[in-house]
Image (cartoon, rainbow, N blue to C red; front, side, top):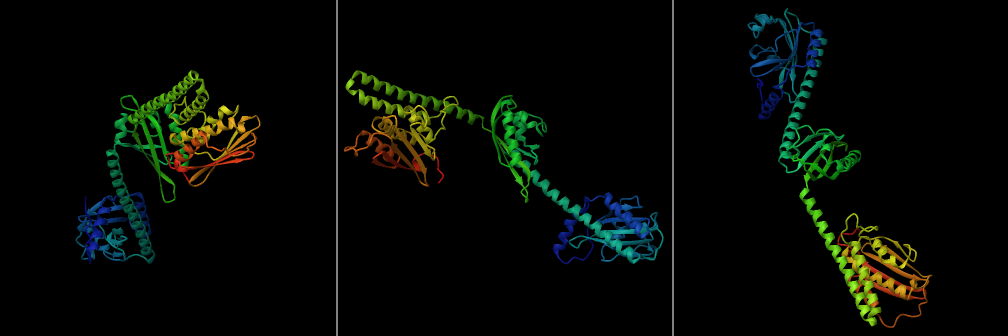
Amino acid sequence: MHETTLRIPVETSEENRTAVILAHDLSSETGDEKLDAITRFAAALCGAPIALVSLVEKDRQRFLGRTGLDVTETPRETSFCAHAMLGSEPMIVSDATRDPRFANNPLVTGPTGIRFYAGMPLISEEGVPLGALCVIDRVPRGGLTPLQKQGLRVLADDVMARLETRRHARVARAAFDESEVKFRVLADTMPQMVWSTRPDGYHDYYNARWYEFTGMPPGSTDGEGWNGMFHPEDQERAWEVWRHSLATGDPYQVEYRLRHRSGEYRWTLGRALPIRNEAQEIIRWFGTCTDIHEHKLAMEEREVISQELSHRIKNIFSVIAGLIGFAARADPQFAETAKGLRERVLALGRAHDFVRPHSSKSRPSSAPNSLMGLLEQLFAPYENTPGERVAVSGEDAAIDDRSATPFALLFHELATNAAKYGALSNDDGRVSLSIAGYSNALWIVWKETGGPPVKRKPANAGFGSQLLELSAVRQLGGKVDRAWEEDGLCVTIVVPRSALSRQPMDG
């Protein structure tokens, strides 16, 4: 590779550094049709048979554009342009045979036979001379007209604009290539499969890990070929999620089974994010595929074990209820107490069944982990259709196994007492249960109407009252207020949101 040496006075090391950079940037310049067109116009403008765009280097001058001359370069020691580039105005040689600088130059005495030369300096943006745009004739001439000089200056500016554009593009391309190399090295060292697409979703890059995992030849999964690597049952779902992301710009995330090089399908988590420019237009998608097969199998196994354990716990409730019923039959005096105890145990069983882990077949019809869903299950024995005798309204709330048990005991007790003594003990009574959410608490109001008239507050707190206190206050950390109004019992329960679920709640 040649290096340009600038034989001009330099005042600072910064100018020297600039010259070296420019020499490196333009050292690989070659001619192009645009520069050839400029030389043709320059030759026609000046009425000369030869025109050149010359880049002067350490040992040679190269012609990046030329008209009327077959050679592409000459030695630097014979260069007219090496002199022309040192000025700021066109250098004009009317008759080279009479100029001491060029009289013995081989380009003058030899077959080329230069007599007339006019060269306009080519100066970089940094002020560094690079060469010249020149016109040459084989006969002596008096010079250039003012219009020809002006035209040559304009054309020289066009040459420099083109060279600078090419230089900046090459620098940017080099920087991009360096960045691309670094990205590929980084991507190939990652344990995950990495891929990239154009804005329209066309897959055009995969890292080495992808080909190692799939065993596919490089390039074989470009475009839409990637989807064929998925399990047939997962392909349409993956396509649907991907199309949604392309249409909306939303992040892409989906689990699917990806074909391993062994032929086995392994569970994989696919993710992708869009890269946007300053105008917020998507210019690229970058994604990863993570092998989660062992984790997925472990989770499925854990879910099966959890469902089996939960199912056995549910059976324990049934066994306990059966033992209570057996004891009641053996001791008739215990029958009434046993009946209430058995119903409470069964209510706990329903609460557990509602919040326990379920398979797709065993899941309750109501929304899982929902307070209203649990209430629907608890009140079902007291009405033929939901809402017929007990109307629940207001805000729903997420619950888990921690709060489901005390809620089940609390509302089972209220419903049982209403069926024995209150609004559900006749055909006309109704119960309204309203739920209102505030930032830190849930307010629940149980209001009975249409039942037997309430004459007075009970003198003594029975087991039911103690159970309400145990459930709402001690287990849920809330408060209970009971009012024996003339048209029926009204119970207000305040429960902190932190007691409802282990998951964080929105305010």
